[in-house]
Length: 114
Image (tube, rainbow, N blue to C red; front, side, top):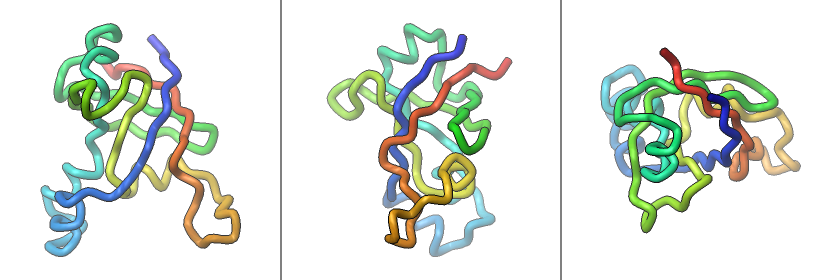
């Protein structure tokens, strides 16, 4: 099953606290390697909390685990992940002269990893 969805990377408190401690410790790694997906999308795609998914953009591919979010928190068709090494692999090099790669509307293919 390949499903195209929109990925929105961003900052989170858990990621920030983990970053203060160390990028190499569990809290930071967990925050930056877990993609949040609408629970209705997860049910439709046969995904469960904790399963691994492959995300493929025009610029790269990563494998992360997924967790569900209620529709009130994350609309269907959108996914969220904290900035980190996986998101960097999915972003292109274009910064629109801002110094930060364009990242707020990444079209990605989602596929469950067996």
